[in-house]
Length: 280
Image (cartoon, rainbow, N blue to C red; front, side, top):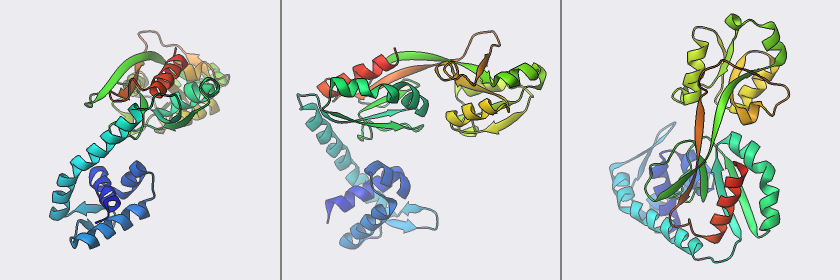
């Protein structure tokens, strides 16, 4: 049996889809499918049922996945231990952050970090999903709520508020009762800023729904309606103007998260300090 084949199968069992397993392993989905087939051949066992749109584990597949899961966790622990043993500042560090924070607050300032620590290589991932620090999908992460996963250490490093923004012409020519709105899609219905926007919009029209904050800002610039945007985005955009509605603004906390095995590693500490400075 090839242990790499087993690694790919365990990723599929954990992530449930070929694409998600491939993303967690930094390979393409064809490689995952090929490795799983090779494992089945070496074991003479059918581990997955191949359906038109999904892979489902067989009973044998579930049994092997349960037995093999601790091996994966041990491998990740070994990787963390190896990284934690490094005394210098250098090497690759992966940062996971919501796209708006990654694009507007971190990426423009990376030159400062690299000038101070030229041996560091940064992999910056702007993503809405929660990257797993236990599985080494990231070394540091910014999250908008305090994590509950075991093994993680979190510190609140920032807070930002939302406001309503539209184009100056739209706000000048449109009476409040005729306002239309740009909102998140249903995947974000439970987000505080979405609930705040929907309460204010009430029965008025939602002209666009999108899960991307940059798309919302771009749409608001064109004059189709108002969007709930972070103030650090809206205030810096000359094509947008804030519409104040009074009352208590909605905001989100920003938490810096690291695995406890890595929190004292010099490189991780240097990058964590940089990130905290970006949000100061």
